Length: 133
Image (tube, rainbow, N blue to C red):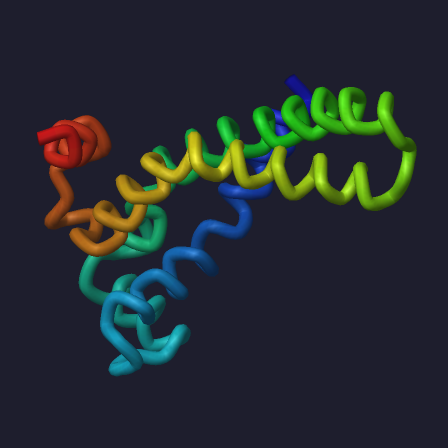
């Protein structure tokens, strides 16, 4: 529960940075980070900077919880054979990779919501349905 709470708090606190980065990437270098945030606030209001926060928090909850669980399990299994820093590093690599593979669909929903903005977006559920189709 503590992992989930800290993951959600961290995502909410840093989301405007991720939002600006994603908008910059979507505009292929035609917009600066500050320009992306300022234009969004002017056209959509401050809430526009938080378009896509719901799937971002869901993704972070899934990823953080699974990453730690996978790491602990893999580290335990790998270090039972040999207790080296390499086996711990391999457990981290595999645990993080597996967690990211499972959590990445939520990241796609977030990008779609950031792209559509708060006014053009139909919401998280509609984006999930669109992806499934």
